[in-house]
Length: 265
Image (cartoon, rainbow, N blue to C red; front, side, top):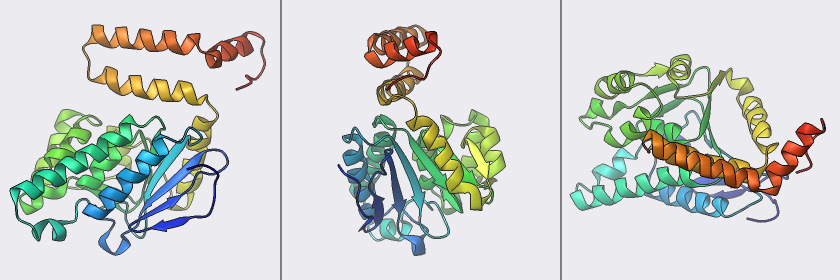
């Protein structure tokens, strides 16, 4: 991914190459299936994230869905066609690998949520670094309604909302609305659908205005320290800040602050 060019229709994913300021848009493109995560879509999304992660000019990724919904989870029809344990193990391992790519890539990923985000779709929202939802969006981990406890979505959900709130969603399969999702920490902002893209652009622009290196270093350390004990977390954070401060970017930023001028990044 180098110079920006026209939108490419890579079924079942729409990939818009980065804009001049470094914004990349990915759109799940199975609207008639509410963007269910088929094997093909998982593969296409994983490949796109790998390419973007290596593009130092890409600064922010916006992940949305075509049609009436963000994502309805795994493709149950495809899953039911192969009732084999080995197949299911490979499928969920592939999905887990994809979810980890979202958090391990250096660029922040913003979920653009409208319609429903259910099961693995809700998991995807939880794994994105940030999420902006339309007022009418709804969220659920509803596998339990068909006898399938959403164990993999539970990993992301339990790391976004409180334990009891997450468990209630998992054992009831009930929907929560966008304001509730914001109150519980699953999404950052809720706006009218007509304002969704403008709000996301404001958020993306705020991130893009900051130094790429600092954002990338900070994102990596942020997720690592969450899984550590308090002492190890402080050690990692201190080492990260030391490396960040020693870099020319922070040196210029601090100098600009002292001189009361805009930094030259």
